[in-house]
Length: 352
Image (cartoon, rainbow, N blue to C red; front, top):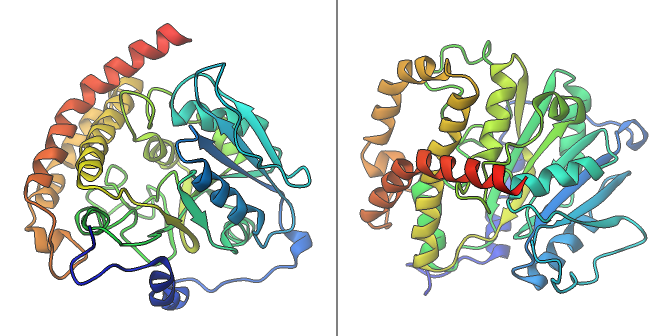
């Protein structure tokens, strides 16, 4: 099913987004390659689409960066699983198995095997731009205060109405095209920070300083795709970083293109899952520190104002086409989130 007005291919999107290279509040600082740190890239997978996984790895192997390795984590629990497609290239790609289900467990496994001073994460349904890792490395080196970075996520294509609806309803993965620094001090006047979504970026395009990752204990394994909680692990990590006094950044020049869900059924399932992951993540924060309840209550009026905005004000599109029942799926997911977190926590205790 094509989008109304015709499909938009990946090449069309690349052409129309080239101007984003100049839309930033910071000036890019060039450094000699020998001053850039070694980085590792972690890619979790359940190998749902072997061809797509191979394309993801091919783009990573083409990165314009002097020193990096790629850690692919096979997260299929079956010990008799079929082999992954041939991914190795001159020793740069390393494959590990993590039988415990969930993207958080897979990413934590990948981090343990990573050798870089900084570790970046992407997914097996994404393609990175050639300078993706370069932009991450430059930001870390030139901004020593930064503990973690989220990058810009653009659609790989807008070929079906479901892919268009995702951009219309959520605004894609990001709500800004400007480079930002985020901390409790810098954004003290923001009525939703740090509990508002969309500012930090997403797990498909993020990187973190090794010491900061270790200090926070990695991703919360009760959260994320592959668990009953279905998401929220990336937001939780960044929120904990700023709540503990750290600083995270958004870097729009670090671009990843994501393969959005193609069918309407997949879209509504994703909307429900995002709602579930959001409140499951809030539940996890409260369980770890009940003082979050008071902080969240203070931000509740601003959150209600955001949720009750007319659809044309919420969406980045001048005209919206997603069905009104999309809100119902999202709210039902949010209502289910705390229970989903409880189910995930019980399952984790049994498996570990």
